[in-house]
Length: 454
Image (cartoon, rainbow, N blue to C red; front, side, top):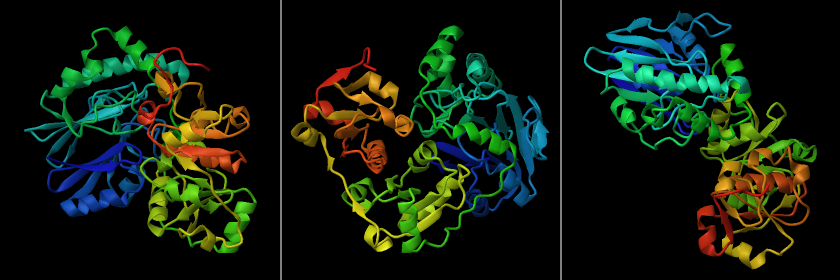
């Protein structure tokens, strides 16, 4: 048995191609299935089976499209209310994939109908746990409905214990979530690989002997998650088609200028340093990187017209990333010179500083705006700072005080997005592009863990 890992760091997930040298099973593929197909070609194996551990909340699946493209058997829990033909599979059922035996194990918790798969070649086992047992953690349990969270958390506690009981102690563990995905219930261990034995020794879901304590602690530590999660499971139940990865023809200067003038969403993919220095008036900064699609999908009303502006490479990558959220074929303007892209449009800029710049330039009446999550703010914060998490900046724009705003986050990335959104709304902003870890050393007064001001 060989397991090929297909990373999607942009969403903190992994997909898997599991094969015996001739035929392969694919588990939890992302929508851009060309990566899976390339891995299968490189391994010289045929894809005969595709399996879903659950209806995903954080991405649009490629499972349906991949199975159709290869005439593969599509394994989906019989209890899932899907709108397409699939091979229903239930708890305890086994399927042969070449010389491999694949056993489904019901592991409710992350969702009601979650399955894990134990794959055995007669000598070794591999456990594919989806959003159930993660490295050092488990999948979050609050994505289905608020009324279900407590029950699902109890289910999660029981499920992971049943799973490790059914698997070999030396089995390798391959979760889908836990590599930065908001589907994790807490920070994962950061490990790149693990085994059932290692999780038995270190995973809090397996080491905490008190189920009620585990449930209370997990729920108390759940944090905000992207708003687009509400639509993903529904999209996956319909059987989504393949990703549309072609980059549309670049807009001409007149059309880009019109979109800016009409207040449409024009997203600049350049580095936040370049954006602060000079950008098209009315555009917003979502620097391309691993967090790009998560925050764009979380913050912007993506059913409205969307235009991506940036280098050919960044635009191509952004189109691929957004397709995983079901955002297909956004318009583009390829280029990195704002004036060249729309000569008639107004150019804009705003200051960008480090913590020393805050200490030197901030007036007493100015507001320090902290756009980190509420849990980050509660642990440690600049004294007197106002907390409006990034995902709440647009809905709570009326709560943002007048006057100069010094905007910060943990690293500068989220603050760059927030500063651009506020600047687009006509606010006077300064982007603090610095690590919050360095704020105290730089001389900023801090309040630490304890009761945080509202």
